[in-house]
Amino acid sequence: MTHQEQLVKLAHAKMPFGKYEGYHLIDLPEYYVVWYSNKGFPKGLLGEQMQLVYELKLNGLEELVRNIRRNFQKP
Image (cartoon, rainbow, N blue to C red; front, side, top):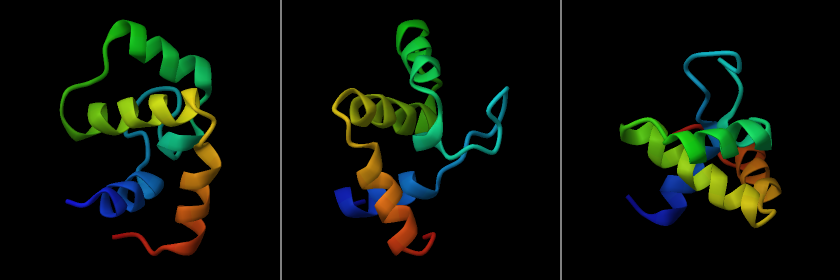
């Protein structure tokens, strides 16, 4: 999977459980993503995507992913 495909998939990914179930991962509150960073991200694709969300939020790049969501269809 290319980086572009990975970002498009992330742009449409939603939280599958918990308090923020149904939220797009990029729209999760920063404190929640930081908490997971300290606690440990889930295993598998969700964990990888949440780790990427953490890095994007850390660098102030959330809007990049939101623009991708608006401009690219769900894969």
